[in-house]
Length: 314
Length: 79
Image 1 (cartoon, rainbow over the protein chains, first blue to last red):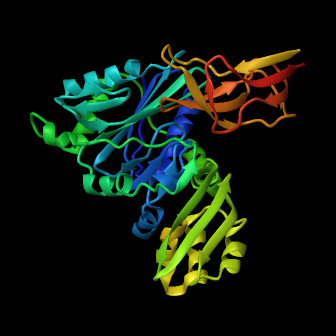
Image 2: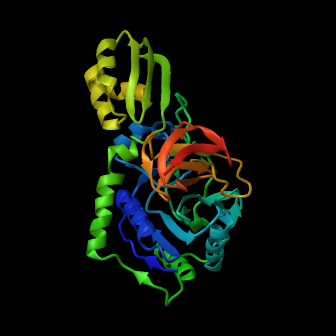
Image 3: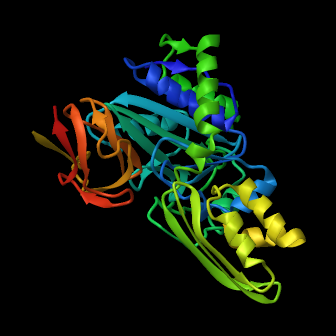
């Protein structure tokens, strides 16, 4: 077992770092710990607009990052610790990777147990969710560990803002009741102590503790810029969907409908007395599914009411 | 010779998987070991590789389709 040190809190860099390590250290089992500044991280084949309130995130400046594993949407902040566990595996088996992590948590005083297929809980409250990717017989398993996260933001972003106007076949998130590990410790520890002690359990002293060279870091940065920060990866991978929403916009009835395939909009209709429908169709058809681009279109169509119109579009 | 590539059974309890993305188009040449498509089941994304070299002749499922295990997903015309 080896570990590679990563002190970055940049969610785009950290996804690239994990993928780089996965593809570089092919002969060893690997355990990583890392943390993200506030970010929403979605599964490989999820429809971002359906899972989170895109406009609320845009206004708060919280980025959305797509990861390479399956599963649902999670909110990360600096009260959350992420772990990555990479092993050689022929078949999928959550227990094989979860058991050592749960044993390590128990050893440092966290009364954790396995719950459902791939969650870790204290009592019935979830502290950790996980997802996996398998490529050429190597399993990348990663999960969150809620230590002292802002559960209010998590709840707001992932639970109440689910958008039901989408018809699509992407992966949908499960909604669970969660708790922070810090509330359940026999003796208190800081999040730094928690990480040090967990790492010591999983990667015993004497095992390789690596740091990337400057050249390797440059490779990670290239992957971050070319893949994880790209529109093609984050939005272009959205599974095909059709969208339809109707109601009232400034006292006038409104109906919005469009489709998107590979992140490109077609068949757009905005039917509302307050909006120039021909201009809307012209601006939206062929447009990229993209919060900034959509916001600009809304400003042209609705002026001061742009933010409100945005709520009707994604 | 035609060679079918099936939805793999990755765990004893796995019954089906979602074909998430084609990584090759019909008519593309593929080498054995090269990734052909990606599937998702139980929060796992798995890359499925070609078992022979040749040309991807037929995509038997569309992106988003749920496919039962051991059912053909791709047909490769082997070299």
